[in-house]
Image (cartoon, rainbow, N blue to C red; front, side, top):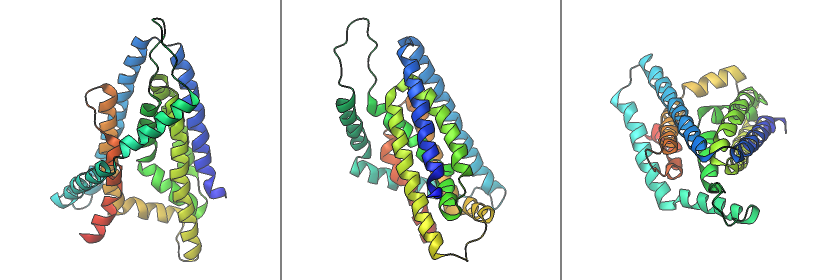
Length: 263
């Protein structure tokens, strides 16, 4: 079960960071909380832009950022978002968050001195997407499952703990629920990789070789671009510029793998 170590560490860092951030929010005036949320939104946009630059750099060092490679993210976003809207993932995730809020923290009658209670679902949905759409989550989970190497996931866990603290200071305790999302998502990927590794025992290269191969895969690069676009959308939502239903875009992460097989 050592292949789940990174996912478990990630779970606790988000849980602790989010809890501390939620405690900080209780003593923070609404005006400051709103400004902090906008500042975090700018940082999230920066993270997304950094991933886009990384995506463009990969192709500029090889064959150039051709229209073929640009077409894959466009098709992925269009197809994936249409599928997500049909399933209505955002509504389902918000309903789950609202259900948990009703069970764990019934809304109290607010008086003039109370700060408006944040919707638990908002923090849950936003943090879940930020913690799960990045390439570190996928590559780290695959390495953990294939080789029991959790270094990438542990490094991600530290970053997620800090991010969870900052997000929860503005969005509230709902951010901590994303710890379960990350645990389930990364745990399933690691478990699947573990059993695939058992089947391919003897034919799998070293951890470094597999990581280099995964990072160079066209599908991984296209997924990085799609994930970066989602992160930028989240940042714009946090700033208040847009109200994009980012959760409904999640199926777009899987489409690049299918398109790279077909095209």
